[in-house]
Amino acid sequence: MVEIILYIAGGLILLGMLTALWRFVKGPSSADRIMAFDAMTVTSIALIALIAFFNNRIIYLDVALVYGLLSFTGVIVIARFLEKGL
Amino acid sequence: MNLKNVLQIFVLSYLTWLALNWSVHTDVLVTGAIISVLIAVLLCSQCSVLQEVRLTPKSFAYAFGFVGVFWIELFKSNFDVARRVLTPSLPINPGIVEVKTRLKSNIGKMLLANAITLTPGTLTVDILGDRMFIHWIDVSSTDINEATHAIVSKFEKYLEVMYG
Amino acid sequence: MEIRMLIGSIVTLIGAIFIFLGALGIVRMPDLYNRLQTGTKASTLGTILSIAGIGIINPEWAGKAFIIISFVMMTNPVSSHTLARGAHHIGIPLSDKTVIDKLQEAETEENKEDQI
Image (tube, rainbow over all chains, first blue to last red):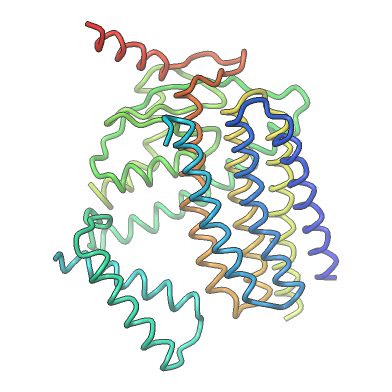
């Protein structure tokens, strides 16, 4: 029962990532693409947590934490670059 | 060297370490204490990130109040987003309005901007001094005072006690 | 035991539904700022609820889940705020439905003062 609900949740999260990917491909401006990328990385943290449950490995949560840290820095750097160049 | 600052950073990093490890073995405790002391003394003897935090019982009570209001607003904003997205006609009336804040400290302004971003239909775009520019998905008033009352006031009364 | 796992999985499912609705908003909204609004709010609460559900199912993971939750809550609004400010600075247009743009007015005022 629990596993089925979590599989449905994982499917919904994947569907959400695909929808955000459509905005990433379509654009139209570079800021739209970064926004879609940001939404996808935050979403993938949730997906990594689900994968950690399915494989029963707590170490994957560390991966999610570090991934969140790096994606945050990346988005900040690209946004600053858009604003006034490096 | 600011003792209060170093102590705050030490407690914060030690609590983070304990939550990450989630065990009370002696070696975990000792390693975390050594690393936290090193971080607090070497990296943060000059910094002033948490300088403005007040540590009085009243500010703790208001911090709990702030967190409670924040969670309620976060849930309300998500149901608001769901309603707007699922309505076929897309009911939006967006615009960028200006509000004023009475907060002086930087960390207070940051928490206020974060809270505004996560409340229903508002997004902080820019801060110039005490003027904040807010993208509002459903503009009901373009007047500064009315917009301030609608967006900022509910958080400001808590943050004012916490950070001044 | 079983009840606790069921509650955790339902919390995760609610989070996943919010994430999907937020992604739908990213596609449906007419301009960047409205997309940022829906994207930030929905993906923040969706991720928080998903990880909280995993933390409820496995109580010994609760510490790490709490760290990730507080981290996401602090950083996600900051990155969307930085992105909105950069986009407004380089002149990404607002949608046709927009009724007012006070920031544009403030910036033109400053430019006038600079020229005088």
